[in-house]
Length: 535
Image (cartoon, rainbow, N blue to C red; front, side, top):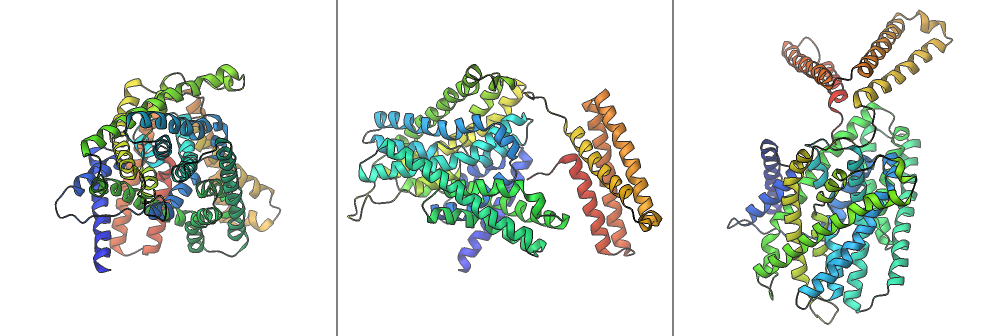
């Protein structure tokens, strides 16, 4: 027990150092951690780590999906549902079928069922990898929404394809009509279960006397309840988590009504998700020795060749699918033509952002060792796992490292007409201040108007409204991004000096630590108005 605990703590410590180093080198940490994990696994004497697929599916996958769905805008998700569906469902099936055809033709002893199984495994891109890589560059909001929406749903569609392909490989029977019917049943009931449980959790948060700590704990266990309940009835746990997460996020303003609750939850989730993401990516690299040991009937170089071939196929298939999917609906539908054309740059980035990740590896590892109780080995299992690893490594490292460069080279710009963030924030604050002022003016109580503190607050709101209106006018008149950047730099410099002053005040011991911490939190909130909430 002590030995395993020491291994886990050492791994966590190494991961944190590697993430810091990745930031220093300006490399997206998922890419860097996979490379580092691979390098560490080749060091003589390093303990072998076995990645149990059940750990990924039951421990890591539910909260990662729930967090992703929580920060996904339902309005944006619904607005771009057509391209999201074409990628999350259409591209997954297209990739699975084409991979099945090519691998069964090119790899000796590989049947169409095994190829379809491999296609289901390698078809879904990884959400975290793409999001982390894209954080370092400026990307149009439409592309971010489509990529995030795709990654929310494609895990479910690929896992369903995997289950049907696995059944076909074991039984030797496959009915397309039955598979399609089962697909809609599994997906639809997963969504129903997710929404039903989300309504129950909504009622608990809304109507019971919870505290910030209890709310945080409930949000942590909610994705596990969603996932396990759906899987217990053999429906899609992934879609249950996604649908439940989208519902809870949409109603979050009704559930979590205090700032302390929201700040507490943000701290809990930011820490937990970061640690999970970092761990799963380094675990990918650490799996190589165990995967190589499983290659018995194939040489390593043969397996690398097959993996490179499959990688090239799925990269090309994404391009072949994305460009028509982006433009053909615009030719067929007048409604689709109302949105600005994505051109060629948007589809290029979506095509190149198809990095595979840990879900693919965990799915491959979940292939059973034997076909049946007689002990017949599952054909091609070890090769499928190795090919999956190669695909993850090539797409994650090659595409992950080159994606920011491609974005900068093509000089990608915002596609849609979007109100600048500064104007949105100022406009929202203006609405909130006007509500506060109207409440004070409409309140009939004389005591409120005689209260000096309330009068001061009212005067402050009136001054703020005038200031915000003037700022919005200046942004509309000459929305000079350089002026806005200069203004933000000034504020950040002031906040840095104020932090130093608070540190000096703490050493003087005149003010309580509690009040100084409150002042620090206010500075954090002021900075968030400029930097936005990173999640």
